[in-house]
Amino acid sequence: MPDADTIHVLPTAWFRNTWSWDADEPKPVMAQIDGMAQIDGTASAVGIEHPFLGDLELLAAPVLPAPGSDGAEPELLFCENETNFVRLYDCAAQTPYPKDGINDHVVSGAATVNPGNAGTKCAFWYKLTIEPHTTVEVRLRLRPAGGAGRAAAETGGGAGRAAGAGGGEVVVGTGGGPFGAEEFDLVLRKRQEEADEFYAELTPAAASADEAMVMRQAFAGLLWSKQLYSYEVARWLDGDPAQPAPPPERAQQRNARWRNFNAFDIMSMPDKWEYPWFAAWDMAFQCVALAHVDPAFAKYQLVLLCREWFQHPNGALPAYEWDFSDVNPPVQAWAALEVFALDGGTDLDFLARVFDKLLVNFTWWVNREDHWGNNLFEGGFLGLDNIGPIDRSHLPPDTVLEQSDATGWMAFYALSMATIATILMRAGGRRAGGDLVLKFIEHYAAIAQAMTDQGMWDAEAGLASGSPPCWMSKGWPAPPGSVSGASTPAPAGRMPWAGRIATAGRVATAGRVAKAGVAWGARVSWAGRLVWGAMLAWAVRVGWAASG
Image (cartoon, rainbow, N blue to C red; front, side, top):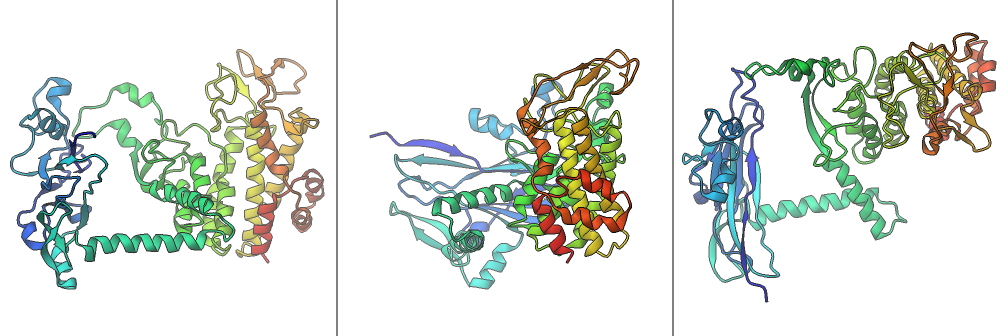
């Protein structure tokens, strides 16, 4: 039988180091609280004072002397969450207890933890002797300061003694204590029951137990991946006032044109552990799923991306952190419609708020990503990894690449905007909104005709070619159709998956929208003939149902 062994477990808390950025930035503090064991049986406690978070308590429970532990209480260790200048730069130390002080103390016994039991980073050092095939549970709680007094007053409980599985006794919270059965276990059980009830209402009646668990895990992953996203581009470019100036090359690096970007917001991340940044089109799809469990947060996310501290003054939406100027597929209008519908189709203020800002973004696409003005669009990467034989975001000089996926996305964008305009006109009180409905229908028609005229649509395959010709020359090439000076088009190859995107605009026909346009302009008959997929089925159901 395997032997017992000892493991070291160090639950750790720290403050993000913001006090080193500015000379007058307040420095938070965490310090050991004495006497907590006499109050409610807590083995170790840390008091936290923060100018933004307020006063908190972080509590750690002793481990019961069970077959999986030796019953020892954790040892509190403190250091500063500050750079180890000696190790990194071979210069004078800013503190004798730098951010890796806890690690150095545990691993090698170095005197790099603060004997005064205070700092900006702390850990509870549990040394657990584990027997084979046993389980050890470590319990901690973070709560507002003064929680012990409130808990004792509410339950009449206090410190007590509990027998462990090994027969020994150790001080542990009972009754009103933070780790006793009447508080800690009860809180966990109630939260689990509430979660069970919440997901049970969402689960389709016909779903199997396995399907219900997959759904629950997917939603839980979305909710768990909410995270504070803090990024001030101007500050990053200019450097922190209390730190050395950054190299001048930084002013020419990524995101240098996004000085307006200044995020300090809770956002939905793809995965806050592996991918702790937002991506504009990923977030749109995440919002559609989130609308099933938290529609208010889903709407907040879509509005946030269009706020003035995110959206560029020229109308562009930030793509993702490593290059805001890259281009993501414009799926925000579609996502807004989906969220609007899933939330009951009544929040017209939300729909109008998103629509007004997306008008600016749609115009940016037309002005910046249609070089020839021929309704065939560029865009580059567009979120499709390894989609082609070339890097579409970094083309050779003087090259224009017109893309079927970008053009398809823009057709899709036009349909989504036409649907929102219809809803706002008929149900949102925008009686003069018919002009915008017609504008987007006609734009869709123009894109459809351009794809046909430029040989972008493969009727036999039922797909768009992955990319139409691109024109290359030493100077800006002549536009397609020029009689003289036109450059020879160079095919960029077929990309079947990218070509499928262009079919998004033809999934279903909605003649009612085109017919309704008769009252809005004489050219609608022309638009009606070309709009063979005027609205997707989902968009029509949402738009016409909400608009009566």
